[in-house]
Every structure is written in structure tokens, then in C-alpha cells.
Image (cartoon, rainbow, N blue to C red; front, side):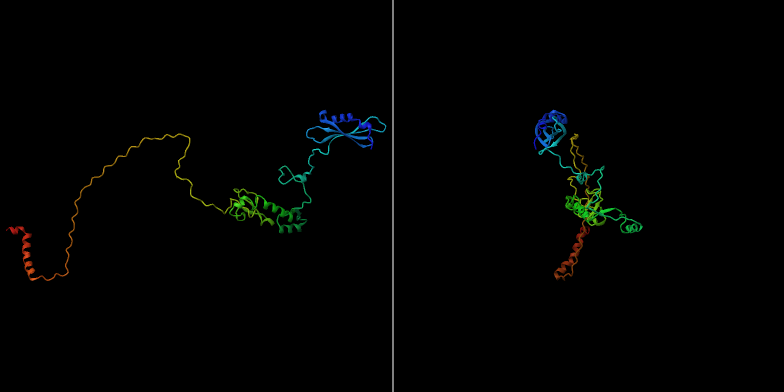
Length: 308
């Protein structure tokens, strides 16, 4: 396709349009190329020097009518070239939001074909209402969790920070299933999960697995050791000076010792005379001495009588 000489040479007209579109002459760079689109229709490209638009170009399309000697402006755009810096592909908000992004002022869109949910039970008449009340009280939701949804949420909770692999569960001596503060969930989740109701536990108000654990278990205790204070009356040091009285205390006066009164010794009791079993018969000579002995002993005992 032959190039149109009038449109190809209209570079100055295309630059004026680019400057008017950019709002500043400094934002329009050199003339890059001219491309023939169709007969009497060409596009001029100028480099863009605007910050943040690396690789972008000013595209100015010119045209002319048959047998007309002047060019006319058809379109003017800022378009990306092959090596332009582009923003990531646009993702709808419903697909872009992730778990944890929801805030108090946000509302998630309704997902009609959610694979995690199955059709629930809905009462359509008095007979259905009676049957529903007898089967499970309070169940009137349009949709409930299906097998896939329950498996997905159970695996996510079990692998999370309130499952058996948590650091507190590994260090705990007893699982949550034996704790008085453990409130089991209803339905099929009852055998695997429950809610913690202990305000002293870091899991208070959260869903925990039956084999989770923490240090606030209701049935565990620690061994109470002796006190670590070395002295029952400790001395505290501080920066406040305390005056000490270094005066020696007077020695206490000694009380006089009581006088000891000598007491006469008690008379010793005379020993009882020993009784001989049987005295042997004296000889004739000893008998004569014995006969004279009483008289002599009588004189010794009565000296007055002896003097007479």
C-alpha cells in the first residue's frame, strides 16, 4: 500500500495535536514512525516523556478526502507500545477479595453456584414445618455446608493455629477435650472441634480442635515448690541514706549472787547389825574369857562405878 505524501509529510500538524493532548510541549518526544492504515489514512507516533509512562507513545491519526490537499485529524491517543510498563490485568472485585480482607463496612457478593454449599431444607407447608421442627429445631436455612465444604473448613481449622500442631498444644499436658471450658460444636463437627470459653486462655472465643491444648486447662496444675526467698526478713537496698547509730550499748549490770548458807549434814544412819546364821560352840578356854568379859565391860561403861 503506497504511502500518502500529504499525510506522511504532516508531521508538524500531528505534533501540535500531541502537544495539545499532553498539555505541555516537554511531554512530547521525538517523532518515531508513520504507519499507513488505509488509503489516505496514516498514524504518526511520538515518544512520551511523561513520568511513569515508560514505553508509551502519542498516537495521532490523520486522514484526507479524495483530491484534497490538506490533512485532517481523526484520532489522538496515548497508547502503550510493545515494551510499555503496564498495570496488572484487571480482576473483578468478587474474584480479587481474599480471606481476611472483609471489614465491618463491607458486604460480600452473593455466589449462586458456591461449590462449598448444598441445598438446605425449606418448609413449604404446615406438614413440612412439623416434620422440620421434629427433625432438627431451628434449621430453616436455604443452603447448608455440603461434604466438600465441611472437609475444607475442617482441614483449614485443623492445620491452623488452634489445632494440634500449635506450640501451646505441644507443650500442654492435657487436650481440650478433657477441659471443662471446652464447648463442643453441634452436628458433624462435634467430634473434632469446639469453642473455648476460658477467659484466661489465648484461645478464648475461638474454635479449637479436640486435641488442641494450652496452659489454662481446668484440670491441670503445677508442682508448688518452696519459697525462693533466702531470708524471711530480707534487706532492701535503695538510694535513700539511712542514719545508723554506732554508739556502743551499755553493758547490763550483773545481779549479786545469793549467799549460800551452810547446813549441817544430816546424821548418817547406823548400819543394821548383821545377824549370824549359827555361832559355833566356844571352847572351854574361850568360855572362861567370855564369862569374865561382862564384868569388865560393865566397868568400862560406868566409869563412876569404877572410881568407887
